[in-house]
Length: 416
Image 1 (cartoon, rainbow, N blue to C red):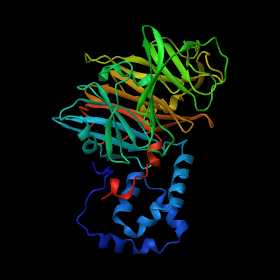
Image 2: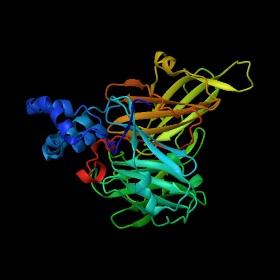
Image 3: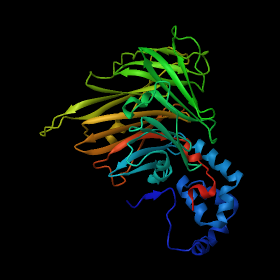
Image 4: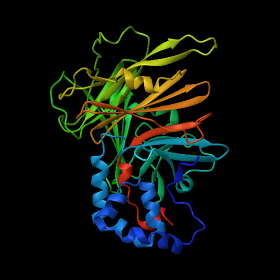
């Protein structure tokens, strides 16, 4: 596909001297204007410019520009700007590729993780992409039943020790109940948390890369809405079956151990009938996708989206779900396509809630990206183009990351 770019930077036949000559006019611009031009580039493009344009390498690598780029990335949060949609695609017989869609540029990029991860996993290993944060990408290896983390900045991969629950296959990991956090952002350390029911009791498990050790905590039942939730608190879904779920909260607002509760959805008189409903959970929010059947002469049972409702919690831990907003009907009309099966991903990054709906109809996949800005109470639909491989897509994991745009590896690490 013409708009498919390599994060690693392709080698072109033109010598570096030709690129430098072509940049002569650009280099004559005032530094303020040059900064404005460069911060509008997606991270892969910026790293490529740094690798082929030596006169700009010093500017792009300077602490002032890096800080300016970080602030610009964060401030553009209400649009899809700072966020990336990441998809791991299996390619037979032995290959695999991680693709990243960058909202503001509207393009897909190839993220080079296959060569980095190969020393940590045997050939032919069945990998599943679980989560991403900053330069860290977390995979589950089904054959060895273990976790592998890739650090794109350090160009390294390592296996994590087994969790307190022992070795686990890919089917044991539930997207709604896990979270990867670069802690602090931009550092070489991370935390991985997941919540699980053990003998019908919610537990929170946390791995810290700094100590290379796991911690486990049994959650206690919250006695109704009480302590206020802190801005750095973590909500994880320990179990769910449609509208019924067990939420675990850990962080500011509650003393250890973590607490759990079973929130209920309110009756929405505007929901309009029961129909088929998909419940998606993530980062202390929930989305209910209502669909209706479509009468078609084919034997395939297909549906279309009829409504999307966003729910959240109040300021206190332990309460029920509260309706936050509904996607406007005119916005739904823009992506309303027939589908046979659908799943979803819900994540809150930099104060913006992002919903990804993945559907399939007769072998063709479709991606819908919606973002909601609570500050402005505004919904946006981000059209996601096909990269040329959605038909028959063998997708093995999806994630959203806003901190990926703040990735600053050393110059030799990605760009050659």
